[in-house]
Image 1 (cartoon, rainbow, N blue to C red):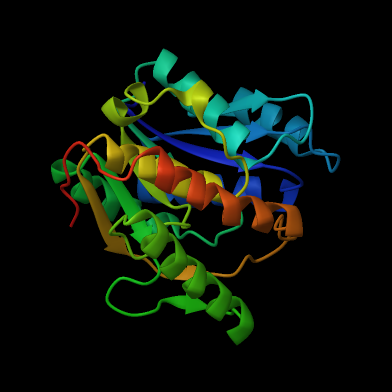
Image 2: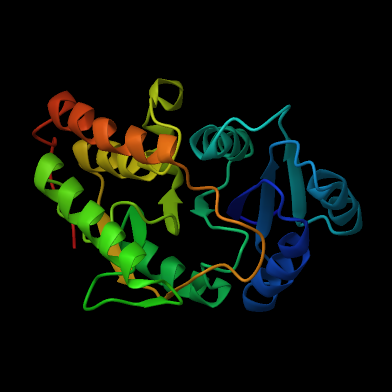
Length: 242
């Protein structure tokens, strides 16, 4: 078994799960992939079971219904910790996150506990987004930084690599957010506990197929969660961010 695991949440991603797993294995043949599926109505779960039966590197975790991104990752983290993986990645199924970046995360993790793939470090690297969406995302990143004091350029990004020690040191059942604010909360928890955080540049490409899961409810959650995090812990135990 590999010591590295890519965790990919899915909901109606039948068109993407096969190609994205092939792309990951082309880059790192020995890595494992865990798909966490929320009972996708398009048959993604059935396809994942077939993929897992055909390839021991592929695993499928099924949940009874759509419960949100955060809960999917929490389930995946617990599954991974039980199986003693040393490095756990977050990655989207839709090719917004380029699997060819994975080796860069692994190299960065040699001197970091949490590696964040940033769309905004040393410039802006986003493809196929309208200006309105880019401005919203960049404004949200600035908002999070100002409210929480967390010194990262892209706190809402979802392409990450955690060392096992980070996830083992966080009370996963106490994580309160579920939408895209989940990414902010997890990074904030790691930062507050003094884990070493490093950002590396990535290029974000809008999804090839399927549809975005963003909603007004998810956006509203993100707005108030940031203030809750700020009041929860204004001062981290130690800071080591680069």
